[in-house]
Length: 91
Length: 91
Length: 91
Length: 91
Picture 1 (cartoon, each protein chain N blue to C red):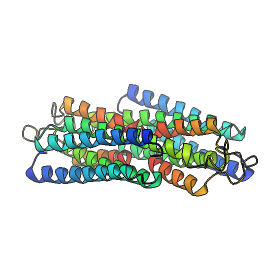
Picture 2: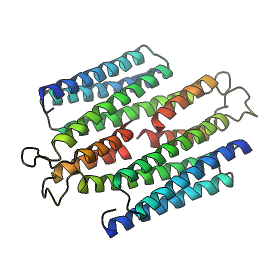
Picture 3: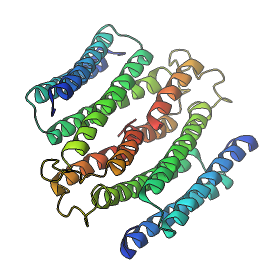
Picture 4: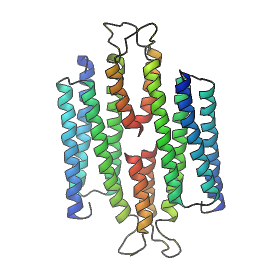
């Protein structure tokens, strides 16, 4: 979102998720079993959690403190601890 | 999944989710703010949880007991209690 | 809940959880760091999820179908699939 | 954790949770039904999520930026957005 590289990585993730959602659509149309559809839904949920973790990480690293105005103000260790907790709950 | 009506309802849900995922893709391409993207992701997560709840409900009602072979064997009240708990955790 | 052995296993789990909650209480009283308390809370959440998974499993195996009145009516494979999905979401 | 008032509020929360866990223990000993125990477990999970949200909020407000060394560096609006997302996932 903030650099060309981040944006591309997030777009790649969201396009993979779109592909996974389309696969659920096809499975429903083909009247696949509940088991398969439940696994596919759980897969999208996990992928969405990974996307959210990445966006939250970007948000913490670049928006909580304006690095241009307050260089060095963000406590990196405390930010990493927060990210670790958030990732636990996003799973 | 089991009747034309269920299938259509699930397809409608999954197509709405596809539209929501495409909106995230467009937001990232347009370099929308983290806040907006985080809200969109949380929205898809909620919609996926709703889809899962519906598929799990179908699974409980139609697959745990074969109603043709064992009519009346599924305890409806116990199944409803289970669904209520599952919905709490899917949120 | 249903046999002496199940009951003891569930009680052991819940007593361990009580011990974990008491440890959070002591950490707060001793003004331990946020990091430690966040890890302890995440630990209790995981342990509660494990307890819920076990109770849900008991519920599926023994209450959805009365085995005395409808022997063999519960589709074991479908019940296992359901438990696998529930465990994914309980994590 | 950081002021007498915060510490007391967190201790009150964790003691209520201990009481809820003890109630599960008593319910299991009394061989209460699955339904009741499942509700009690879901209640503890919600209460633990509330406790975590409060500790995470403290952590964001007081540890990500040292307010003594970098006054005004934390973007309050961005911090609030983050908390809103975290609360959605903690539920």
